[in-house]
Length: 324
Image (cartoon, rainbow, N blue to C red):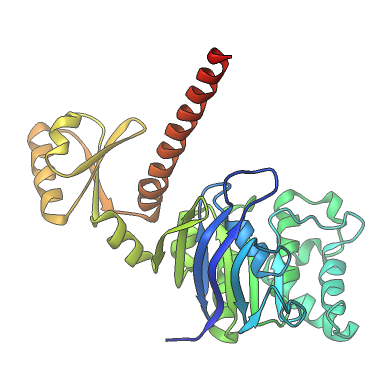
């Protein structure tokens, strides 16, 4: 097993204006030379963890070590060895794509000649070569995002953090970024930590992933392990007509998903449903379960709990008003 490059133990973070912890005694390990993905809805704690790991934010309690160094007590040596694409980063409007990347390298000590050489390659890799001399204020949001990614991946660092890096990118742009991240891991041995809302992105890139919600880790492992451990089914069957909810429940866990009914089950039972569908002459769809299914299953329960807590708080407030 590879050594851990990040070790977080009992991390807690509560922002001043919030009663709910952003991180709540979170434990997390990232191994050297892997792509590790954090999945979670907005406000789950993903960005908070990244900001603590990159020494931009202090936790209320707990410990975190990066490269074996205490990130809370000794952040400076860590900062020289990491690069970051922040979620809300913005390129400078007065600089073009080439200038941004060259500047990011020279700020880390590269000569102009070395920076220009590396910049040429990364702009070509991310399909930015054609707009290398265009000021970023004239570029689309997706192209600006690619500039920020280029500024991170061009750096010769051991550990990179990318917070929702492909948000706003078109499908081709996303694939370009995926290919380069995989190359950096496989050919250069980089460790990459990223957050994303795209489940297909997590499946395509991740060696390991964690689903977090309200500052807790709900599931971790590789994509296959997470699906098998947390849903207990390998197959899903989608039905739009010809079956009632009650009928499908007898085959396995059944949920409503938009205008269809979805059954989570195994191969044998899926074949049974298929035979019955043929008899009734109704269409069905059979496919493997996805990370999206697991995410909804795990995080959806948390949403229901939050809604119940909100109702209880509202009831308490109403009773307080009535007593007054």
